[in-house]
Image (cartoon, rainbow, N blue to C red; front, side, top):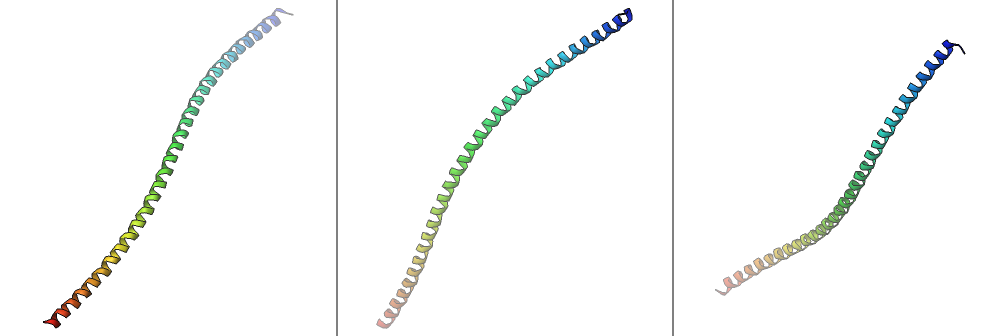
Length: 112
């Protein structure tokens, strides 16, 4: 091998070593970034899991409130129907009382 060929080979090897070092450095940076991203992903997964738990609890509470609201609505409808029934009875009794008062008045007029 000639001196020029040795020099050229040495330059090529030097360039290769420099490139390999650069690639090794890039790989280390990528591994560090990947580790950071894995940690962030894990934290986000934990946060998402907590939010899902809270959402499920809120759904359970909403369902319970809906059940209670339906029960109260049913009770209110029964009270409304009873109130209407009482009002009808009062109106009927008022008509009877008015009729009876008129009859008493007519009787009093006849008696005098």
